[in-house]
Length: 369
Image (cartoon, rainbow, N blue to C red; front, side, top):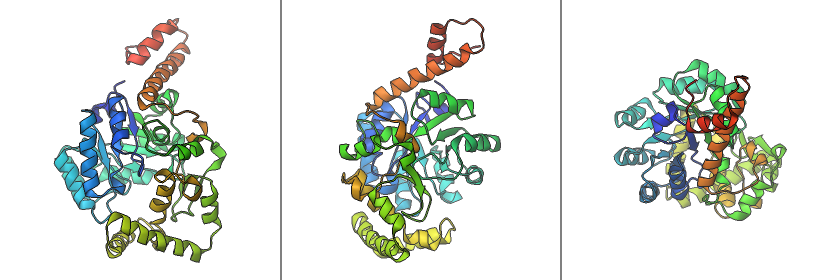
């Protein structure tokens, strides 16, 4: 299936695996590339040495193109930018836009800039700064998310910008891909669906918590770090939602010291990064102070396998997922479903086209009529 997104990224299918922290490792990214999709390495939660090692590990497993995600406000952001350029990765993703000079460096190196946006104004601003494509995430998406549903946000953004779009938030199968294409997207981006695959490094006990969740249990709350974030409502989240302001601040301070020890960055370096983030106007002071909560509590669940005492960021679509396929199986089934969905739509025209022929032509991208 060829779209503007596959042409830009060099993938076989218009399906992006998003850069979930501590989940989108080298093995998951490589598996996505081998299966025809486009994967992003979760560089935003890695040290420069880990990013370099991850890039090498991906290239040892596949020749497929891939990207790296990064966060401009971590102390070593500039080093990761340099690594991405030196290694000539195909694309970079980010949620908080770097400065125009950094974007210009990527573009001069031929690296695709594809940020994630959750609001119309952010989409327009990102393109003005030089974004080559956008991941447009509706409120159904996991982790930090906006307030507008994908079915509303995507047409809004499509009318405002001309770059290729990948729709995110609520996608898990081929029918969703076809729906996104019909709304003006050039492909889809999925996180939770790739989290729930066999190549995902998330411990099996934690995966089981996702598989047992129902859509009504996957809510949006600002209790974790002051920003709206979609998560599975579990005992830890309930505790945060009922905690006092003082209790939340003490938890954040404890997690900030733990995070600085883990990353090797000094508390002073993290404090300076937080101050830059606050001065940039992206977050309130309270949100900046609480920012260490998310990485430490998410790790508790998705790395250490203790979901009861950690946080489970999740798209609402997890409530519809009940299996753990290999990535190759997921992609094959997704494209078969997309072909079948297009054939059903084609049949609504009543032109007498043979349904079997429609499925075959849809699956191969032969849409000459």
